[in-house]
Image (cartoon, rainbow, N blue to C red; front, side, top):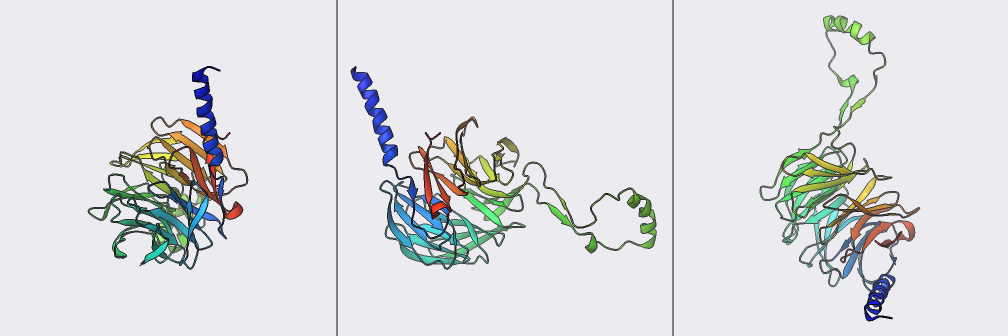
Length: 358
C-alpha cells in the first residue's frame, strides 16, 4: 500500500477510535437530566438533575468527579463562569448556588427569586450573573458576594431562557409570554422587547354599557352570534408565535437566536428587533439551543428527541438525528464540536451523539 494511503487509513482509524473511546452516556443521577454545560477548558461536564444534585464528570474518561449536594429540590440550570472559577446552579427551591468546580465545594447561595430558577448566564468577565425565573423576573447578581445587583425586568409569564452577548454589553431573555426582552447591562435596564404578549380579554369584567349604547349595539350583536362568548385570547404577532424556551446571541453580538414551542429557530436583529430569518419547522417543540465554540454551527434539540445542526452563516442543515423514545431537555456541543451532549430521563443520563451518526 502506498505511503499516502497508509497515512489516510491511519488518520481515519485514529478518528474512529477517538469516537469509540468517547463515553456514550453519563449515568448516575437519580432523576432526569435537565441541564448540561462544559467547563471553559472543555475537560469537565456538569449535569443538573431533578434528583436535586449537580454532578461533575471527567468528560474524556467518563468518570464522575464530584456530586454537588445542597439544593432541596430539582435542579433546572447549570452554567460555568468563563474564567472557570465558579459553577452556578438554579433550582426549583428558588435559589442559585455557586460552587468551586475544581473541588466541588459550595461557595455561596443567592436568594431573591420566588419561583424556579430556570436559566443562568455569566458575563464574559465572570463578574456578573444573569438569571431567569418562573417568578417572571430577570435578575442581575454579583457572584463575588452573592448580592442581587438589579431586577432587570419582568415578563408577563415564566422566563425560560437567558443569555449574555459575547461583547458583554447586553443580555436577553425568552419567556412563556412569547416575547424576548433585551437589557443593557451597563445601564441595567430593559432597552427592547421583541414581540407582543397575547392579551386576555374577559367580557365579564368589562364596564357595563349605558342603556342608549346597548340599544345601538343590539343590531351589531345579532351579526356576531358566532363570536366567542367566554374569555378569548388575542394571538401574538407572527414574529413570535408561542413560548420562547431558549435564546442565544450570535458570536458578533448583533443577532439573537430563539427557539420555542413554535418549532422554529428564529434570528432577530438586536438593534431593531426585526426578524431576519427562520429555520424549520422542527418535528417537535424545541427545548435546547447551543452554539459551537468556533461559532460556526448552531444546534437545536426537540422535546421528542429530534436533533438538528445548522451552518450558522448559511442556515443550511448539516446534521439531523432522531433519538427515538428519548424526551430531550437540553443540548450542548462537545468542546471539539464533533458531538452533541443532551439530557434525558431515559437512564437519568446525559447522552453523547457524534455528528457522524446517521
